Image 1 (spheres, rainbow, N blue to C red):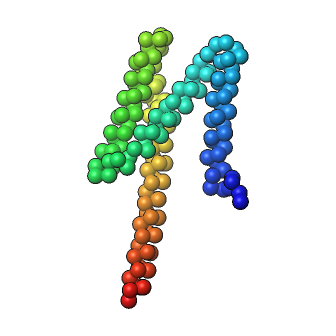
Image 2: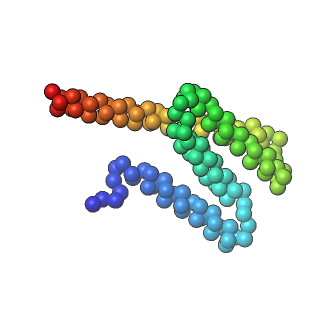
Image 3: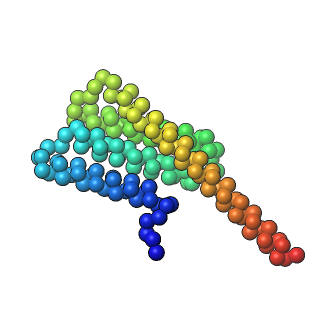
Length: 145
């Protein structure tokens, strides 16, 4: 039995890369005795990725709400959290005058691409599930006749 196959090869590579990168950040912080901007940026990207995936994964809770409204609320929630984190970080270090704009762009562009991929994949899955259900219904009708 193969544990790694075509369907899970890329996700496994991504998981390994993430674990190695985070391990590297922690190891560098311990061995160098300081936590530099590169380490902060890498951990921030991880945090923002977790935020985006967590927000997108909650779409199923709003089945009765129009999808466009769900997508808009998800984005507003996510970008609101990003801006809040940026504001909180201003208490610990001086922010560049364009920090909010940069964070907006740095989060919005990848989020929009990721959300598009996510919802297209979701629609493909739903279409496949509906096709399977239709085949099951046809089989049951044929069986009863």
